[in-house]
Amino acid sequence: MTIATPTAADTAIPKAPNPYLEFCRQQPLGAISFFIIVVMMFAGIFSPWVAPYDPLAIDFAGILAAPSWEHWCGTDAFGRDICSRLIYGSRTALVIGFTSSFVGSTVGAILGIASAYFGGKIDDWIQRFVDILLAFPLIVLALVVVAAVRKFVVGGVDVNLIIAIAVPIIPRVARVVRAAALSVRVMPYVDAARAAGYSHSRIIFRHMAPNVVAPYLIMLTAFIAQAILAEASLSFLGLGVTEPTAAWGLMLSGNAADFYREAPWMILFPGAMISLAVFAFNLFGDSLRDYLDPRFKV
Amino acid sequence: MLRYTINRVLLMIPTLLGVAVLVFFMLRVVPGDIVEVKLRGDGGNVTQEVIDSERKRLGLDRPLLTQFGEWMVNMAKGDFGISMWTERPVMEEIMLRLELSLQVALMATFIAVLLAVPMGTLAALFRDTWIDYLVRILTIGGLSIPSFWFGMLLMLSLLAFFNWLPPITFTPIYVDPWENFKQLIWPAMAVGYRYCSVVARMIRSSLLEVLNEDYIRTARAKGVYEKLVISRHALRNALLPAITVIGLEFTFLIGGLVVTEQVFNLNGIGQLFVQSVSRNDFMLIQGMVMLIAGFYVFVNLIIDLLYAVFDPRIRYDT
Image (cartoon, each protein chain N blue to C red):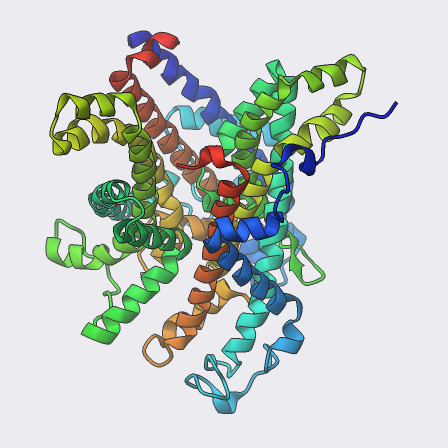
């Protein structure tokens, strides 16, 4: 005998509307922010075709040129086209933002579920570990990890940076997911799975994890915003992505500050891009939370 | 209450011990230390012998557990060790810069709380009107705009409108308070914007929650003036969760300062931290991490005690 697994159609109201359209209707701001994210992803994936210039092409004849039809956002101190560097920069920001938030949230979620599932001593130890990591602001912990892990680049991606940003995300997600998993833990189907003699990992991954997907997704999106901000900050401090890679935070550091007077566009546009990206992911995360989990709604 | 306090203080010890273990071993698990940065950083060709002798001088060649034990024993005596780069006591390096960062942090807190309380309250009272939308846009901006970029924009506008740039040297408050204020108000605003947003959002949501409570309806039904209902009944209860956020975000200001001090070229704790990270100055990093964690744990203690004072349920539960 096969037991039919309840699908979305069973639990939803009759004639369930398309969930995507429903999201757009209920959360117009969320839809707008999602649109911004899609545009950024498009620019990041297809940067070589979208960008008008080579982001690394140095042109000493045209340094510090003001925004014009030729260079929409002007050029920097090396004559590089800022608009093209912004487009390539979205690639850096999204790759590091996505991966570090994904790694951090996933490890955090697994820790959180394991903590709730096993309880007792294991729960105590994991929670103590989480408490310790929570004693630091995100950027401070990321800096400590930067100091500990050597610079390590694979295929143009700074792996050490991803680790540094993922570590501070782990405890924050673990705490939230544990709270959600605690309520799943007492569900009869978990007891049933245990009675059926399933292994711990099977119960954690097959029975509990699918039921804490909502908080996991919400945290994942929200932390992409934090991760992009952290990457920009670290690169700005000279401890993240290094020249000549195009990265928004890096574009604000170094000689950008020396040209306040002559070339304000050098700091206006990259900062605006960071803010826009963080804003879009923050807003999307908020809307997703309201949509997926109306209990949180105030 | 005394029992609760003692319990709470004792709970701080394992956390701080955990922080010490974690940071000490994390820094040393991966090979690479200050000696390499110092001697080979510029691509200089230095023989292994010189490196070994420098390691020996700094005590980095000894077993990890010995180093850790010594560090812990010294810390218990109040000695945080010697910076491996400047060779001056860690405490001295920190104390030199603490005043400046603390002043910026306090100014930022003052600005943030002063603005956040009316903003959050108005947004909650006039929910879904243009006031609410304005506050929400302003606060989501505060969460999205990086504080260092906001600082740059402040500098840029000061330059454009007043042709004024912050001076290069720092003037302490006891030398010239006005000069000092002019210098630090901008970094304080830069880090305070985010702080203000977080607190305002918290006040808005907790006030909305409280306004739905039965005792508010009771107060209104008794015929209490709406003003008194808001100030005496609602706001007083809504501020309790806000206190937590104010306290926690205060300890997290160091995160904003790390980057913002760089923009305004302030020689504070944040800049010291960045320097020690880029130089792999383990002793200094450890010292500062312990300081930040200690501060966080302390503020948490104060918050918990405040809660216990305000809310008797917490006292008796434990």
